[in-house]
Length: 545
Image 1 (cartoon, rainbow, N blue to C red):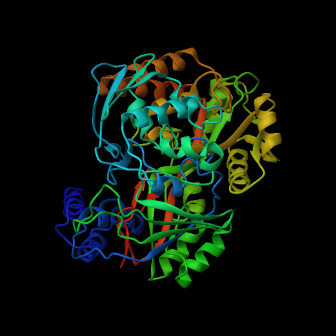
Image 2: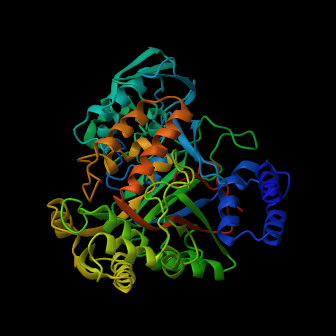
Image 3: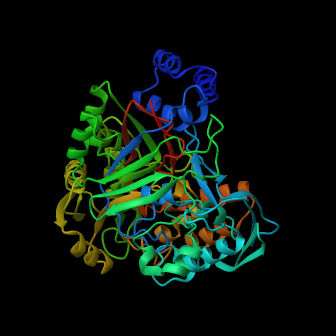
């Protein structure tokens, strides 16, 4: 393990070349996915030199989500690559490819401090201009935060409602105060799906109005808006006045422009990338990874910290038979996660035993109860619960893939160990109605890895009445721990609080999980300097070789 870490550090710091890393990593037995992950997340962007980079050209990026609005505060897709490359926030996330830890780094904020548990004071970058030539300062930043917090259509208002006041102390200093002690706010403000407030030109808004802003992006980012053909493409061009310098000492970005194509069919995207018409595909389907591996012109990067959990499973704890914790535990022991991952994981990801918790999440601890596949334990628990001949149950799934296929796997596994399972497949909206009405015995859904940013984001997932608490279990002790963790500033104490919370969720068998599938982005070999904000491509320092 020491040799592996030494090799990673040598490459991440530019001591050995990309080619040397690939050769040596292969000899040490690194998986193809691990090599690609480090190449993208810790290699080319970090080790670029003036001699390596090449300026010019347009990178074509394929994505299967159309742009809903260019106003980042009310867009229903705040994580869209348009927002990441045309707009900027005060801070952002950068993942450590070794540990998956999400580190907060400055963007429009040069530094920050917390004089107390309710306050963050940002020192803002000087000399930054919006694409329309207006200046960025603390007053404009405060206006953006207030708009994102208070706008009725804001997609992040629920997250920002913890903020009590936002003040510009001077032109370059912004103070944010929360209503209560809050240890998680900084990390949440850096998360593209959390509370990241992207800075919009107030001057452009005042001059043109809100409706205009929905069709015209005016930020501080490395790329400027040029053209939007609805449901087809967005064209961005180089921001010649961008504040950040590249490895050659000249302003970023290296590229002349970005062409973001909306291609809903992933098969078409892959065909176009193999033909050279697309350089980068964001969020590829797992089944296409084999094609990427076979084509010498293509590569891919795994982003496990931003993946989906297939599946998250919940029980109706208010009705028989799952009101008995022993039956819930039996169901969790009856899942062969290793076999499921081998069959459905397409060579990436890993079995997932701890619900929304994985190694980089505060509170993760493998000494906590782990439900590994154990048919004998299933039968023992069922017998203790009064079901010596097994139990019959219904499993509700959403009628789509991979839920249907996973449902069939679970049905077969459970039936084999004495949990005789009837699979009930419903369209998404009827499934939601049935589950919300508690008209189910057990059900499952796709889980999120948002806890990798901060466990406080799991409030909606595990607290009583949380909108993402699909099985609607309610445990006041877990609610209390969640509140304690969100307010605790001491990192060691937070770790212990969340570990205790995870322990209760596992012991009381409220939820289960199957395997963690990373977000996978594919690209052509000529694409260099890829960077990601959580899972969204940031192309300010990318170039075409």
